[in-house]
Each structure stands twice: as structure tokens, then as C-alpha cells.
Amino acid sequence: MKNALHSFARVLVVISLWEIEVLCISDARLIQGTNANLGEALQFLREYDNEASQMCFRVNIARWNYATNMTDHNKRRMVEEQMHKEKFDKVSWKKAIAFDWTALSDPMAKRHLKLLVTKGRASLSDEKYNEIYHLISEMKDTYNHVRICPFNNYDPKFCNLELDPDVETLMAHSRNPAELIHIWTEWHDKTGPPLKNKFMRYVQLANQAARMNGFSDAGEQMRYVYEDDDFGHELVETWKSLQDLYKQLFTYVRKKLLIRYGSEYIRTDGPIPAHLLGDLWAQDWSKIADILLPYPAAKSLDVSEEMLKQGFTSLSMFQMAEEFYTSLGLKSMPPEFWRHSMFDKPNDRKVQCTASAWDFCNGIDYRIKQCTEVNMEHLITAHHEMAHIQYYLQYAEQPFLYRDGANPGFHEGIANAVILSISNPIHLHRIGLFNNSTNTFETNTNFLMIMALKKVAYAPFAYLVDQWRYRIFRDGVQNMNSAWWDLRLRYQGVVPPAKRKEQHLDAAAKKHIPADIPYINYYIALLLEFQIYEALCNAAGHTGQLHNCDIYRSREAGRLLG
Picture 1 (spheres, one colour):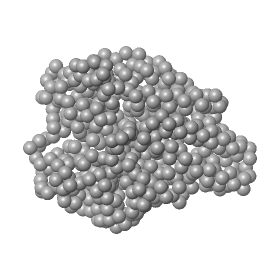
Picture 2 (cartoon, helix red, strand yellow):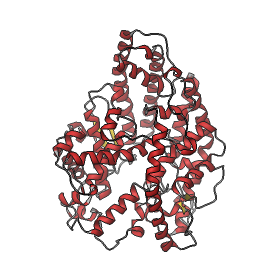
Picture 3 (cartoon, helix red, strand yellow):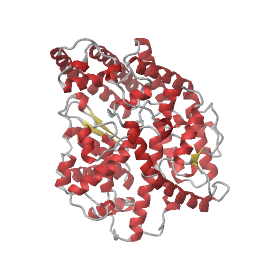
């Protein structure tokens, strides 16, 4: 794993200056048994590999069926399969801890057993093990069913605004501060408080499981998967290197917002209220580009209108994405992909529209789920999700435990690196979607500003989410909300637009918190994507400024990516 990382560049991540601590953990602290028989260990791992692949297929089929047809029956089937998987994981863990994996001579067997022993919460008693996964399921379900009232209309029959697309669209397109405060407050008030007690119990159980595995708390267990003793120090260094650039962007954006909204909402020398940045979490500022672009009169880089003129469909968008990858010498999508994927939102049933790529763990079946609209954003998403499928295809022959990214941020880093190529004006011109000149100063400056609003603005948010979670696991559940806003102010320079109290749990407004999904991965991916992109551009023989690089049709870049 480290060799793969180092070939693109040395990047690591997690934790901040206020909580520097020794993140390396001695293997001697981790739970292990007494059986050092290598033959028995290899036999167990062979059986695990086969059974885990079958279990993954069953669970993902059930998850897919529910995601693409959200009936009560499909939900019950999904829950049943997930329960089977939880039982399987617990049984596998009990078998794995019988081995003294530190004494095994085979490094592959040793690492496989270590991965099995240190991941998950199987160390808990059956009762508590079931409880924590039931809690996570309940929190996700509560989050998914949050509905809020529109601005100036509290009639219950209209209080049905969903996160996607309603809330996100309003935050992105409204320029009415009163409406934005309403939407922001409604969402945060209706997500956090109902989840708070469940989340506190979840923290308690996650910590119990981690300590039984030999970790100091659940935060340390989360970080351990990166397998690097310098994790914390190098994370601090990466953030230091980004801080000045972020501060410059922040100052520019604050000045533009002050011009737009006035001193009633923005202080010339203060933080920015979180609701004015075009995004519910103030993590992506590109949605307010109409306020921020330095050259608003320049030709727009959004090619959505041109796509409509050319008669694009959801199918042709994915065919274009496939052609991008095959032009690099990578693999075509298998027949099952075209047969089973969901490219359009059906009219006859409720589905989950969040775009996602799926590996059904059998080396044959790969799918994408996306409620595709004909626009540039969804064209980029199609390429992004197909990058994940390409990665699945590349490691399909690996053992089950290695069918994943080189580290938890690597998958997203690869997919994002590809997007840096296909979203720039050079590539859009080459595929006939951007017919204006691509080398004007105004066009390039606007493009770089949009990139900064997406990437530089995102860095501190991606960095701080798990800093908060680590702090809660380490220090306890007192003052959780004030701790959240302390970090938001410290790293992002944003404040809530309305008064917040400890009864709120504003971190839970981001789904990854109640859904038990690590977030530091996205910060790692953000760093990796530019380094991977640079390596691919070098392989393609690109000269000149990096943001003008397009790896399309480069077999050399394709070989490196493969």
C-alpha cells in the first residue's frame, strides 16, 4: 500500500495541532491468540475469502434492490442480509483472534489476519454488537426521513422538503439571506436533536469495542487503518501547507459577500456566516460562483446547454465516459453493467438518487446508480463513478480483503484525479462541448477560481469533521456542539447564522456522522488527487501549466493508471 502511495507522492493525514499525540500503536497491544500454525491460518483465510465474497454479493444485491425500489419488503430483505453479514463478521473475528498473527512467517497471512482482527466491533458481546449496528441503522433511517418546511410556509402539508434535491438546491440558488437562514436552521434543528441520545450511546459502544481490541478509543481504531506511524504529524504538515492559500481565498470571498449582502450580514474582519456560502455545510462554495467569479462576463464553462443542443441522453453520457477510459487503454464496461445499472430516475417507484458505483464481489457484476440529468455536473459524475468501476475491474482478482483502495482515501483520490482532466476547458473543447477559445486569461482565471471554490474551500471542512469525532471519542460527549463550532471557526472561519445550544448536534447535519462513515478519507483523497493527476500528466508528456492537462487518449497515462 505504501509503495502505491509513494509512487504518486508522500501524503498522509489525520489530526490537528491542538491534539498532536502518538498515533502509532504497538502490535503487542492488539488482541491476538496462541495458534501460530501457518497451515491452519492459510486454510482459514481461504475459507474466509470465499465466504466473504459470497456474503458481499448477497448483501449488495439486497442493498441495490432497496436503493432502486424503496419498498418495505425490500428494506426488510436488506436488513435481514445485513444482519447475516454482521453475524458472519463476528464469527470470522472470533476465528481470526485464535491465531497469534504476530508470529506468522507469511507476511500476507499476517496482514490479512491483522486486518480482520482490528476492523469492526466484533469484540463486543452479542447483545451490544447487535445494539450498535441497530443504533447506526436507526440514525441513518432518522436522517433519511428528515423533512423541513419551506420559507414562510409552515403548513404541514407543504413541510416535505427533502435534502436531495430540495434543500441542496435552495441553499445553492437562493440569494435571500432570510430564506437561507430558515432553510439552514430548519435542517440543523430537525437532524441533530432527534439523533443526540442515540449518538451518545453509539460513542460509548464504539469506544468499548475499540478498547477490547487494544486501542485507547474508537478514534485511534479509525486511524489505525492507515498503517503509518507518522500519521498525525504528516497530517498537521499537510494542513499547514494549505492554510495560507485557504486564508487568501476566504478573504476574497468575504469581500465579495460583503459587497453583495452588506455589513448587516458580513463583517469586514470577521467570520463568514455558514448559510451564505451556497452549501448546507459551507464545504463547497462553487454554487455562488455568480457572486464570486472575477470575470462574470466571460464565456461560461458550464456546457449543459451545449449538451442539450447536441441531444445528449443519460445513456450517451455514460457511453462518453466509457470511451474516455477505453481511449486510455483501460477496460470496457462488462455487459452486466449496461444491463443492470440505473441511469435514470424511474417514475413508478421511490429510489435513492445519490450517485454510487457498486461492486457485487463476483468478478462479473458492476453497476452505477444515478438519477441522471443532462447537464455538465452529471456528466462529470458519470466519469467519476465509472472511475470507481475501473478500479473494481483492476483489482477483481485480488483476495477479498484487498479488493479496495490502497488506503481508505485512495479510491476517491483516483476518481477525483480523472475529473481534473475531463472538467477542464481543454478536454471539453476536444470532445466538442466548449467551442470558445480555451486560452484566454479570463477563461482560465474563472476556471481556476471555480476549482478553488470546490477544492481549496473544501479542505478545512474535510479535515475537521473527524477531528471533532476523534475529540468526542477521546474526551467524551460533553459540549459536543460547542466543540463542533469551535473547530468550524478555527479551520473554516465560519459561524452558525442562528444561536446554537448544546441540545443541538449540528455535526449530525452531515450524514457521515450518524451513518458511522469516516470522513478523513475525503481529505486524503483531496491531497492525493492532485498528485495522482500530476503523475498521469507527466506520463502523458504534458508540458505547460498543470490545469491545462488532459490525459484523454494517452496510453502512457492509461498504463500508469491501470
